[in-house]
Length: 201
Ligand SMILES: [Zn+2]
Image (tube, rainbow, N blue to C red; front, side):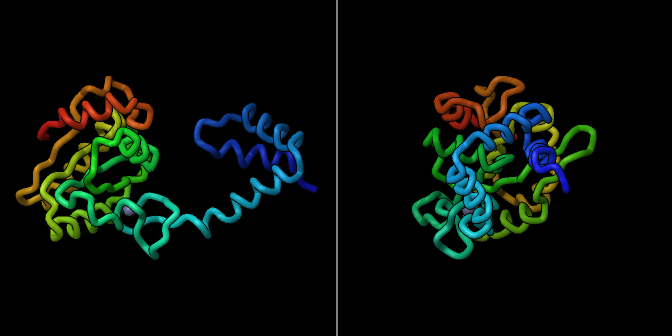
């Protein structure tokens, strides 16, 4: 029989930032938890794909009422002239928390590393920008992290957007964000300032 403790630990080590020792701590925590708590967690994991869908426009994962669009993409009061490009869902959540942006979003789903690893949703990006362009898009805001990977990814995004842009403005966040910082962890006033101070790129 396979060792369940080892098996579950190995599954946790696939999580971002989790090493073998932390993975073991999770497993022992679960073992000491009440059976109902374990069952609830198992149920949440099992039902993730039932309750959560990927929005076909911004590509974030969200609980959605409509078939294909998330709350932000379905919201007709948001500004169609602005499209913000972020790395991941957590970055979008940070921008929403800051409350200083009412445009549309696109989530790249990752970054490209200098060593050529990683992937972003290139084809979806082209599809969404073309569609948004037809609906009045006039400015694309690159809101990537102020890290070397973020900058490398921004270069690739610029490359993809160049033939699509036409008269659209391409801007990036002002460097209120300190070098090396990830958008996800920026506080709301910093993010709002970075957004206000965005500049053409
Ligand atoms: Zn959406």
